Amino acid sequence: MNKGLLVARHEYIETVRTKAFWLGLLAFPIIIALGIAVPVLLEKTKEPRIYAVIDHSGFLAGQIEERIYRRDLHTILAVTSEQKHESGSTFERLPQILRQFTNTYLSLDEADRSGFVDATAEIANGGEGRNLEGEVAEFVAQGDRKRLWAWWQAASVKELDQLDLELARHSFRRVEANGETETPVADLNRRVSAGELFAYFVIGPDPVAGSAACKYVSNNLTDRDLLDWYGRLATDVIRAQRIEQEGVDPEVARWVHESLIFEDRKVGARGADQEVATQDKARQWAPMVFTYLLWIAIFTSAQMLLTSTIEEKSARIIEVLLSSVSSFELMAGKIAGMAAAGLTVVASWVCFIVLAVIIVPLATGNPGALGMLRDIAAEPLYLFSFILYFLMGYLFYAAILVGIGSVCNSIKDAQSLMMPVIIPMMVALFALVPISRDPNGTLAKIMSFIPPFTPFVMMNRAAGPPAIWEYMTTTLLMAIAIYGAVWAAAQIFRIGVLMTGKPPTVRQMARWLSMDRAGTTPRSQEK
Image (tube, rainbow, N blue to C red; front, side, top):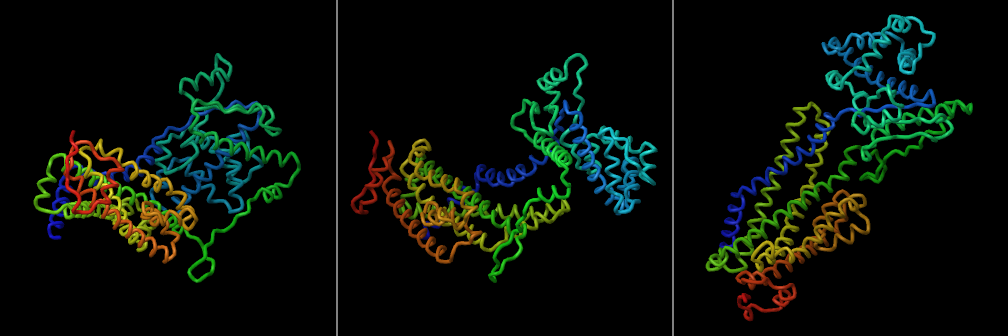
């Protein structure tokens, strides 16, 4: 067995010395980092969607604009009021009109603040303001309301980012719809075709009665954010108009429209229901991530073993090795060496996660999300399951692939023989989400007892978690399956590793399994 360990050591060293191994090692953190950073950067650099509105109703577009402006005013006040209370220099760096607006708002009683914001927002719909008194009237009389409206219309995305303001104008900006020499529709169609406009809306003459003649025109048929956002605002306005038209008390209408909300609870260890935290929901989905990583680790490691076996066979290196070790020692050593390489890859992933948990909160000042990630990643059940099922899954698939590799002279020869191995791995991958949603369901339980699926399914069910007897039974079945796979691979490896020429068929390899050691000798299949 010492010779097998020497083969394992050689296999491990030769694997980790290759550039491909280190590129694969570094690829994981790079891909994860890019997967997180790129969408954020793309979202930040995304240009606002420019749109226009043709309003045949005479009221809806203006009321929607007022709602948009009112919501943005509340967002502005939430940020600037906090900056004011912090008594730092941040508030002093705000534009003067924002400081005046915030100071006026904070000087009012709590009951008057909402009315002040409503009166300020009316300018978006051409309103001159209601009967105002005190500081609110002064704010309007001095023209501050108009200056605030002008600032809001002209503020660029860059300026809003610098002020840390997430307003609707980040994503959507309205422009005028009137054409100088064309009808409005023809002008807007031309601008949409030229890419000057993302889309435009046409509001029918009586939107309160129905949606007749209401249109959304855009050449982008996939990005529906603008349509959904503007549609929700229009629905809110029309609903309020219908309530008023029918003489329904707004409070009664709000109560009728109010949804029935069920509080999320779960049954705790003591048998009583308890609150469901965000971390509990994250833990429910965490095994799916572990399973995906497990799939990548097993597939990558087994694939490297297959490639290594074929390369050594085609280069006649195996013939030299077999002069010093038995075929079983060679096969076992190769499997063990590649398992060590796979564990090295997994260890690098763990190090990357640890570094991310430590470094990112320090860099961003937001430890909450990664603190939850740390707790999930350190869950003993998940870590133990991951290591256990990596070893079992790798040994099972590695034994099959090393047997396939021993009878092939090139990767092309192996492709047709690999299909029966790839199919169950792909099925396990496709079952990730259904099993995560119902880890103790019939599908999950049945697949748990099918050895090619067992490592992936049982890892994915860890949030269930499965019963102890299921862990014990599936582990025993997996051990038997591994023994059978290793035995079959040894039979095929012993006969096929020295063969050249056309690879054998699956039927021929099946016949090899019934041959005893004394009755088989390596023979060439060359024509």
